Amino acid sequence: MSTPARTPSAGLPRPVWPSRPVPPTAPGHPERTEQQGARPRAGAPAPVVPPVAAGPAAPSPRAVPQDEVDPPPAEVPAEEVPLDPRSIARASLAAGRNRSLWWTMSGIVVSVGVAFLTDAVVGSYVLALLLVASAVVRAVTPAPGPVAVSVRSKPLDVAVLATGALALAVLASVLPPA
Image (tube, rainbow, N blue to C red):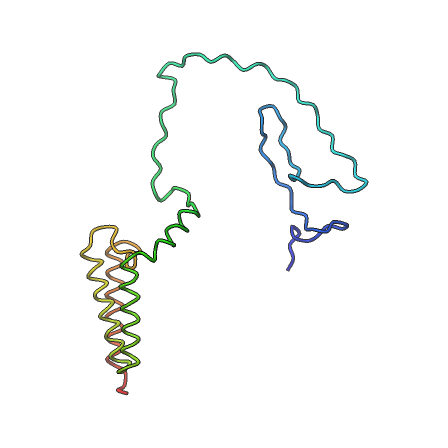
């Protein structure tokens, strides 16, 4: 389904995007709503821009008493700070240098290798052992903990890892022998 914003206008070679307000660049200028760099259509009258009247001169700076100065803004909690895509990208690129991710990945590869070489039950037990080890590591390390197993709060992470290990061990024990 095509949206109106992406539908080409009649006689124009490219899609016409809806106009959005552009903030004024200098005080006293009216707010512009036309697109930046948009070409006028053939035969359309040129837009009339009203002349800008010079406003009153800015008041001279004076010494402001200390009691009139605004207090410094309160520090914003980390949860409310807007996300910066560049810092997220840098953190994802730095993930390859994190040892906990390598240990977790190695444990998963070992458990899959054991399952192929021996039996699916043994591979499941190895994976359950990896989950138990991850739960113990998450429980004993101080905050923030290893990146590979630190997702939410420490009690919730430990509970999820231990429950997953228990469920995997129970399922492995009820598997029929190969």
